[in-house]
Length: 296
Image (cartoon, rainbow, N blue to C red; front, top):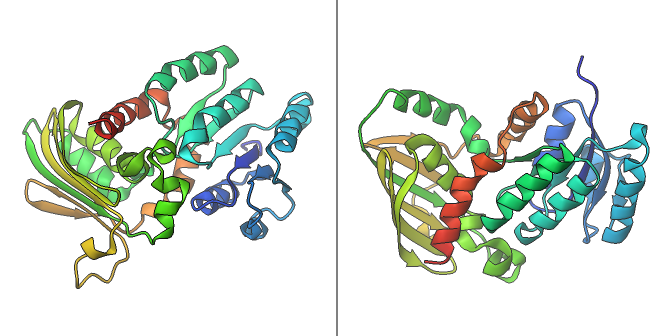
């Protein structure tokens, strides 16, 4: 029987935190402490009403340090759901207290940070894992298996339309220096998926870049890809009943994966807790790509 793991969570009031709370609960583990500077955190009651909550980062850091000095109280994992630009700092907080990391996408904004984190990971003998849940989507796993025996160069079209209201551009997500912009904050899952399916990036061109939509072209080892990202409601098909549209077309065959995208965090946690999961080197190619797109 697997031993119960103790979790901490940074960013418990954020958009993606409920998926992590559910995953911790679904895998039979316990959230011990959590932090968010905003106190709209009633979601905790649905999962771990006994968790200690901190709105002050310094007090949260002291609690982590105190727990790390007592073996029976030490956290096993720190889950990071904070704004993208804070991921590196919060990963370092975990490692300095000998705690393993589960970090939301993107792991970091700058490729140069990856080597430094890898050194710390080895120094402290802890693991840094990230969440790229599309690799566990059943339809995409089927596609991966089909492509494994193919040597063809595929023509690929990828569209991801996930409308956001006016608030988006006034939040940290609309600030490219904090979120990395659309390609990083919205597109990182899709770019990771493309590289996972079709191989390394050979060339990259950005054809449109605005605050609410982007499009471009990628040449990968086994595919030529036209991609489009948008947070504009007007880009949804007029007859669409879905609020979010994710479509992938490979050599004329359409793969629909709009459904099931948000239900995969538990699978991610199961893999990590079983000694697997996706780490720094898995995340590197897509982080390098979106950094290039951001600076193109």
